[in-house]
Image 1 (cartoon, rainbow, N blue to C red):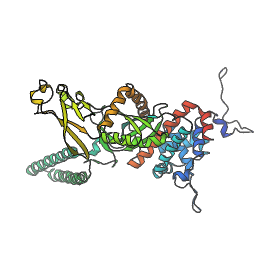
Image 2: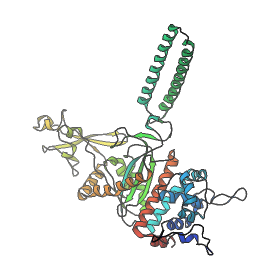
Image 3: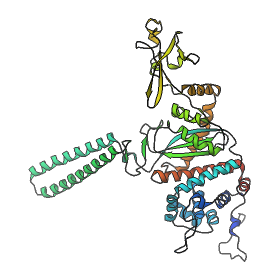
Image 4: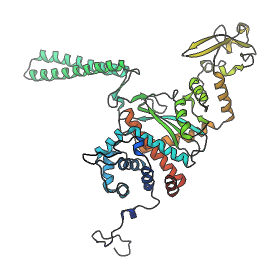
Amino acid sequence: MARFIEGKDRRQTLLLPECLDDYVTPDNPVRVIDAFIDELDLQGLGFTRAQPAATGRPAYHPAILLKIYLYGYLHRVPSSRRLEREAGRNLELIWLTGQLVPDFKTIADFRRDNAAAIRATCRQFVVLCRDLGLLAGREVAVDGSKFKAVNNPDRNLTRAKLARQMAKVEASIAHYLEALDQTDQAEDESTPTRVEKLHEKIAALRQRMQGLQAIGEQLEANPDQQVSLTDPDARAMRTRTDPRGVVGYNVQAALDTQHHLIVAHEVNNRGSDRHHLATMASQAKPAMGAATLTVLADRGYYAGEKILDCERAGVTALVPKPLTSPAKAEGRFGKQDFTYEPEDDTYRCPAGEKLTRRFASVEKGMTIHVYWTTRCASCALKTQCTTGRERRIRRWEHEAVLDAMEERLRARPDAMQVRKRTVEHAFGTLKGWMGATHFLTKGLKSTAAEMSLHVLAYNMKRVIGILGVQPLLAGIRV
């Protein structure tokens, strides 16, 4: 091939063969993986077999298997079978492992048996980011997203789905019984064979009905009235983009608003975000190393008691209040049209009248004060205010915390834009890496480990992009 760039002859024998290290450039990100894991105290993090056994067949060191997984997740190769193949042909992995090729079962078992230690490793990288000065800000954005589990929607059953399936089975049994009667009346040569086949189908359907009844008993025993047959921990959750919802997990994440690094994350199977604000804030605050912290979240996190928990923990929450007032939707005055006057503990209505506090009640563990005035009957604005005898305003005993938060939100009109551009890019990137079916593993424990590997790879890739390979290596080896 004259006048073309030519490669080396495959059969050429070299007197001094090239060193394996020559195939990996100094700025290759695989060197970051190697350095980071070599600096970890794997036994202290809780990895199994970090100390070799005195007898028996030698095992792979957990550092080798962790390096394989981190390399795989960094390059969108999370499958243990694919990682086994890559370990035998990928020059970077050959360099990383020293030409070791564990089988796929060993690789998969490592992820399953070290779920807690993998999460601890993810947190350790966040500590490294803090030491490198990448988490110097005092603000995080919190959000949640639904990730699909290894569970087809048809194999997630609720009362309604179970009732529909049982009705179909009953209809099929009735159909075959009717066909059996007709066959008995026909009495031709093929009758015995047809009767036998019909009896087999009816027996199979009755066995299927017994299975559905057993699932019904299990469903009634579950607090959320759901049963997932493939992944028992997966749950059906509503989403804004898919009217059918998603059978999977709710992944919560807190990201710093400066470099968009994930400082805390959690996998759960509760569809609502309302109860996760204080939990994520309590994880993000020590991860950021901050004495005080500001947390940005969307309307789905608005819950008075959780916002109060944040306030008590030294966390300043910025969560917009959802506009769910039925009065406002029907064209009448909403609660926001009434002004609270703390000096005398009253509300001023749009007509200028004072609503005084009448009594207090306890609802779901919260003390609620109720205000109204006796002048509603003669008010010219009554039709625009209430359909009852008087308009009553309800106020939580700690609502001053919520009022102060609304004042902070008015002073930060860009807060929700900052939140959106911080968290939504991260979730989009993770889902793009994970593919159409997001999780490969089953169960809450295993999916949490899988998500930790994705988060670790995501953070590592961002830090490499921010600092570069060599500065990051210097920071790791300090």
